[in-house]
Image (cartoon, rainbow, N blue to C red; front, side, top):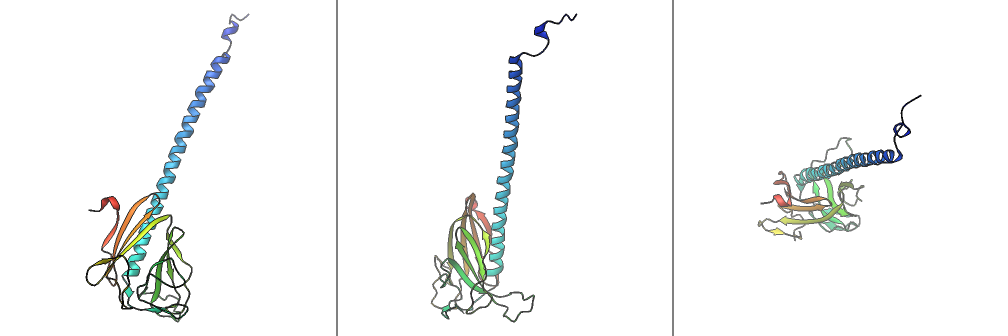
Length: 213
């Protein structure tokens, strides 16, 4: 016969409950750690994507503004639109619009090498518009450059070197010499961008607000 007493034949109920409680705590801690790491990855990815959008915006603006030409246009109703406009009929959300050169004609379509372009803010999205023709045409579908935009401010430098909050030149062919764009979006510090208008390059890259001297 076995000399093992009944109390030594296995674990008691209390010991099993304690073991299960410890295992549950370890499992919860592991799941919390994994979730925290996953949330951090998602946040970093979202931040990088937003920064990439800002970079694409800066590149698009630099390419467009560097080739701006003093060419007034006409809207779909035949009304004149200045070469640089912030108020275009039919598109109330326009921030600024202009005509640029250097529009590559890869399919050799019967059109000019000039392109009418505008940037607009609608439903928290900064978008780029373009028209298939300079005069009398409706814009194509807008392309989204930056989402979750919470604020945009613009300044324009005139021929006297003075900064203005709006561009209401009496000459319809007049262009600003430079443009400053300040843009804020959810979860991102304010971005400040400076561009020269015309066949020149950007003055200064985007800078977080806290890094400005």
